[in-house]
Length: 161
Image (tube, rainbow, N blue to C red):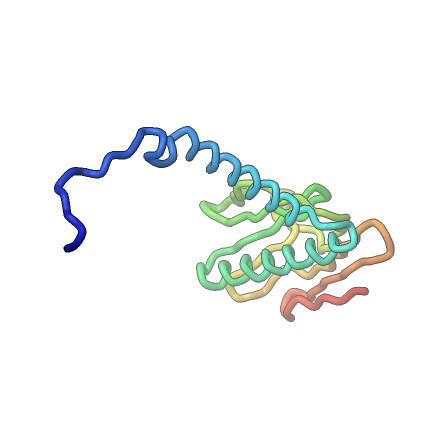
């Protein structure tokens, strides 16, 4: 009349039971290597885009430091070196450096007013929104260059071509 139901448990062979822990670890390791490789490729853009990439990173860091100075009511700073960009904060009457320097992809040159003291950052952000007046140029080593500047009160103005 119909199919006869039984109460016997379904048995699987151990080879057909699924994936082993070793197989799972191998898959995770392969995905991690692929993810790291793709992020390195995305980070290292071509020389043609180096100036735009550096400019975008600088604008983001500039805006973030200015906002943190205003909201936190304490001075912030940026150091611009040929090797990279570093964020600083003013605590306990001294400048504290951030964790690491983010390297530039192209060539970056900063022209800023000389600081009052040697330990003052290249660009200082005050709680009232004022910054150090400066001009900064981003290039890829060829003819393409971008320039940003501010007098310290106005917003950051960028141009290039």
